Length: 212
Image (cartoon, rainbow, N blue to C red; front, side, top):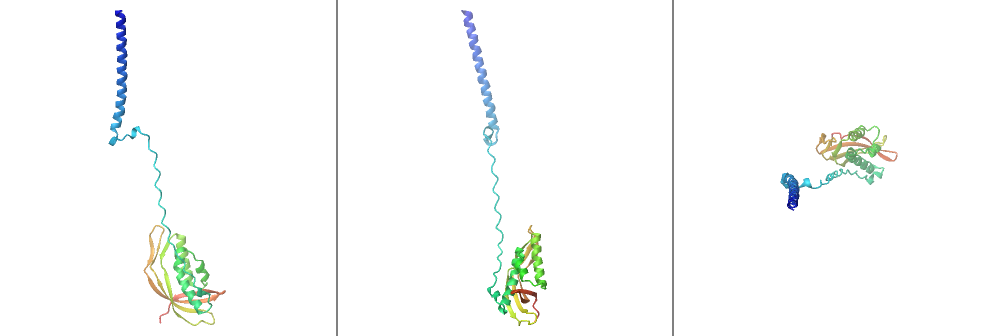
């Protein structure tokens, strides 16, 4: 009986020792977890939390709307085949220049240009060059005023007309923003030669107004 009691006592002690060892191991594991959490900066518990989903990239700002260039309105007076129509054509042609430079649209300018007009060809070529290079033309809005209209030259049918222009400041810039050329507002006076061809007005020549 004494031996049976001792055996039971040893078994009980063995089970108690095993239980204490298991608890110690469990507490040790908890201590490791706690120590890892405590080592995170500012008490951050992200080590025990799921990784946050990647944030979506910030939306790209929409580009600034392009500058709108308004084409001058064609004067109704250009339908007249007399001096009033010639004057309207001279004004319209000179006011069309800044639109052409800014947009590269040379269609109407070319339609109104006589093949002998050097001024017309030079301004057209500049507009084409600006467009081909990817440069930009800003400003240059022009207002034209008739100073004097001379009698029509009978042999050629040309109306010589003196015109004054008020041109706003302008500049040509590269696609990277470098200024290639710029000009302050300027007032100019021209002698414009206007004629009829195929029932439409054409500009035969544009030159500086002769000194009085």
